[in-house]
Image (cartoon, rainbow, N blue to C red; front, side, top):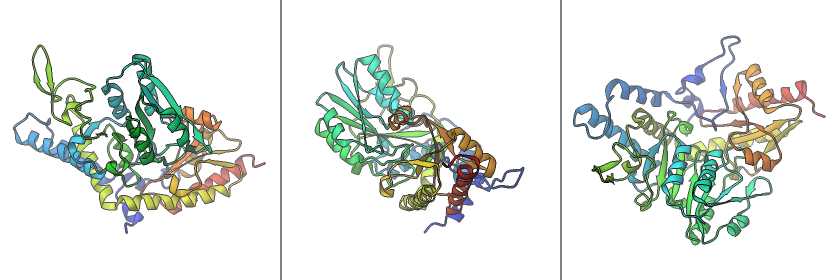
Length: 410
């Protein structure tokens, strides 16, 4: 079994202490982005120091080596999520760009329908609003049931034979709710609809097999799973890549170009126009290597243990309201909460000032969900493989101090 304290030695930022008082850095903002291990940092540096050349086309050694490493990263990501081959993996900037690739790659027709949910991150909402305005597509939203879960019966009511796409988040970045994406895919496919799954909060935290899920598209970001910023992936199920239009045109995404027309390159390069984030892609592959060595089953079990413990501790603090499922099997390592008498930003600043603890505060790019919950904003703590029970204790002890000593607990 991996040793979390040994894992922590790989992360330079976790060795940081505050200069003013020597307090160690406690990072609980992993849903926003993860810290990076030395192995990933070194892989990026190695590319720039030893193989810094553009990929494809070049016949010299540096170009050939850079191409090999970049393509190898695609293969690693494909294997990581259970894809059939690297041809199903397109490297993009992030989850947002991946979703936009689908939004602008489908040939929409007036009257087509898109079904999404009130639980979505803005990245899986705003693109569909733009598509609605540009192409006359109808946009429908699945409501919540019992506050924390999607109403699957409502989903079934909304999907019709005109539904072209169902776009759903796998794990909520606010509630932590893990949605039944396998069931959703089956319902959608029974009506001939495609399914896009936003995996930004699931792929980094639990074992994923796209074949088992049955989705047509899966979008996720490298920076949330130990990789560099500016790199992510879009899984496109085998057979769909030929049907999807390329979002960008330019170099490397073409096979042949004349003044009259262009022929697209083979997959996945059809969707990777221009010089890509080569260093980021190689770093992404190194991040996947790291997670595979640790084991995603262990990552999931570790986060469940921390989340279970944190939820118990927080439930004992007067004035703290927690959002999301109680059943640990139905939620990820994300805890959104509020403290009576405090704005969430105040809570985040106090945790930072008092004990050098980093959390997130605000709407978390999920304003419609906050509206559905009847709250204006929230604070959020989120865990990852390098967090410890001692850090959870410090977080909860400080939160209790804020609630009891600085706020109203009436």
